[in-house]
Image 1: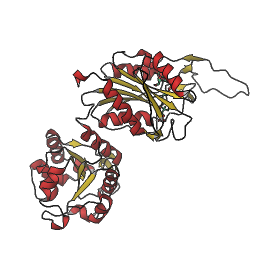
Image 2 (image 1 turned 90 degrees about the vertical axis):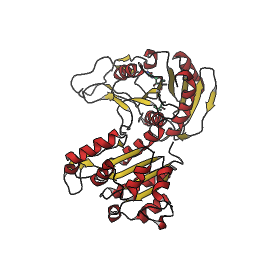
Image 3 (image 1 turned 120 degrees about the vertical axis):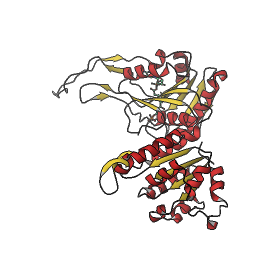
Image 4 (image 1 turned 180 degrees about the horizontal axis):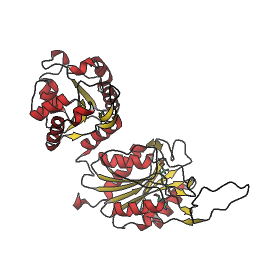
Length: 398
Ligand code: PMT
């Protein structure tokens, strides 16, 4: 979604300006054209040369900037932009934009653009919480600007408070989400499950599995980036909750079942990438089980099959984690669980399956069509699955 898009990155005078270099670099690596516009005070913190080097694009620093190689720069940039991102945004730039003041290149560009504008504020907490700043934030939000952050945390100078520049991942997620509006899943509600559920044995121990949640999170992010309203039901993972979606945290399979039944009440599709524990202890010990130098027996009971308990009139996609006879076993699961599509996962293949960034899957649909995908990033696998989901959804409600 971001590839070949033009992103105008406005950098203003905050110590967080150095973090905008990483943002510019990541966007460039994802294939976007990043045109940086720096205010005069931003140049006190980072040089234009740094941005020019990481983006391989001219950096605009002056109102009448012949050296920038962009003629009538504010109009050219304003028209070319698919999105304008002001990161970091000071109280000063927000005040100027709220009042429609156009006395620098960045404000001129924002006033002249029809592209969506994302603002990532960074300032001292007292400045952010000041009534004047809060009024400006409200005005800009009312005009359709999207805010990301600020976060609560340590600020320059050592104090803590609300004013910290949002994490780069959060800003990137917001850019993806904004650029994805109007994508081929716009207006659709997609429920996604991720991670391995855990069944408590006693207050300290659980039955679990090796799912990291990466596959499910990639699907949720890819669906968001194509315009869907996403509900991500997540078992415990080490991943940060993605922005731009509803995230429901659960621990056990029964909790995941309840959350999925809720999430699918209104959904157009369900994609079950989670690895729910199939069994749970018959009883959870109230205190930690002590070693006694003897064998202990754990009695297990079957958990519900979540896919078997959701509405059958939505598009339902399952995964099959298989270690042998991958296509045969997955086809049997597709039929038994009455799915529209299954992603058969060879968990013994190198760099595939649990806790890696890539996956090797075979897609099998209910008509018996088989598509053997190469080893891809989990985000790319997600998009290949979503291509099929788009085809499964009824066209009239698009
Ligand atoms: O999280 P990662 O580290 O990125 O790893 C990704 C993955 C390997 C976990 C993922 O790609 C995957 O294969 N997920 C499915 C794992 C699994 O539970 O497979 P299964 O063959 O046991 O289940 C088949 C389908 O039924 C799955 O869609 C599963 O979510 C669903 N299921 C399973 C058990 C249960 N009680 N209810 C279910 O609905």
